[in-house]
Image 1 (cartoon, rainbow over the protein chains, first blue to last red):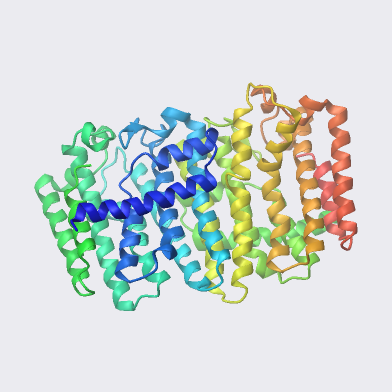
Image 2: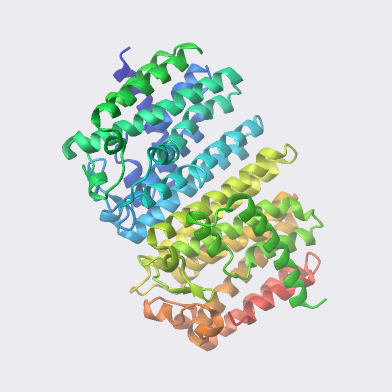
Length: 295
Length: 295
């Protein structure tokens, strides 16, 4: 089976899970339910939950076990995009080829829809934690991993650094720390969640962590390259917005050639880490895909 | 011991818990840590966590057990105030006698500080869930109760209704539903959390629920009365803002006299419910306090 067919299969699993979230929690065709569904179903790549399912497969785990956590990760990611796009933040008009949430539903609703998605992520994880007595501790540890990745020691810290870096020259180290938090933390949680839930060995966890850190880095470098080279038609979001906001990027800091070199080396490190724990074909290709995507 | 001395004792316990949250999670004297601390320590009444500790005492439970959940409730309440005050929401300049969060730290930081507080509430509860194997299920059920109260079936639903009710004539029933969600849900969770955590009997839970619903209602009616009659010097927040935003209130719907009657009857029902489960003196006086406070 080709990578793109396999990716599509994984995406379909995730879409079905998100559909069930919608029919259970966001069934009203108006108000905040509609605003939350709009951004959740705006056609993202689903990289985080796809990673969780793929790692779950690699560890030969039951996919239904990881479902609430993979879903929660996509909800958290989506909330962060909605708040990030707000006029007081990045002030972006387009996201995933569609008008941003506040452009359609207004700023107040966009704030609340983001809040609602973040909270719903925890409602879903805690519902799983209370429905099943077995493995309660492993589930709680998995939810905690995600919570810490999403919070002020993880993703939110990255967003704060991002915001504070506008119109200010930040160092290369600061740029790395910012992205390690802003994008890296949630990707790391997506990769490690199944390992914790399924109680994988220390060796597997350590290597998955190296894999996750490097695809996280690759993801961000590629994002920066696309912001410089991509087109709004293909990426589906505003292009050149980093430049517009005077934001430091891997491209502005290193130049395009060095940025592409660093991207290549990150992918190699990610693949190397996988080799020592079984060389999972899909996850290897996923690393390559993240570096080669055009949106 | 007088009610106010007892209340002060309970508040002190809560303040100490919040201090420890700050020293553990919000220790940086800049950025988002400072913004989160600013609102968290802006001198609120701490009604929700105080209720949780008092119910915990009534049930003869160990106070340290309820600590992470009582703390989480105050964090969630504080985040909701920060987002509620934003220019795109209620656009309030004062809260608890101080400039609102976005007035001091800017809108972007206020959005992120709110997000950070909401997420931290779950980090704290999940840390408790993973630190202690005993009673894991009861703890998960308590965290789930709080999550559902805070989300789109609870507090956020109320905020959406509140926002959508501006400049629109809503029915008395809609007004009640709105407040049952907006303020009531979190107060209900504060009162029921110790009952779930400590596995109280069905009779106790049912009566605590009646108590909680009625003090929640009393709280909101009193809020509306203060918005009409209070002064900014005493309440510490903008007065007449409901009127300014054309919002329906218990006073505008029922008139001042009927609103005060309803307030009195809610307090009576709350006290009645307590009688059948032991007539806890502090909780009785708490109901009266909520109705008589001047801020």
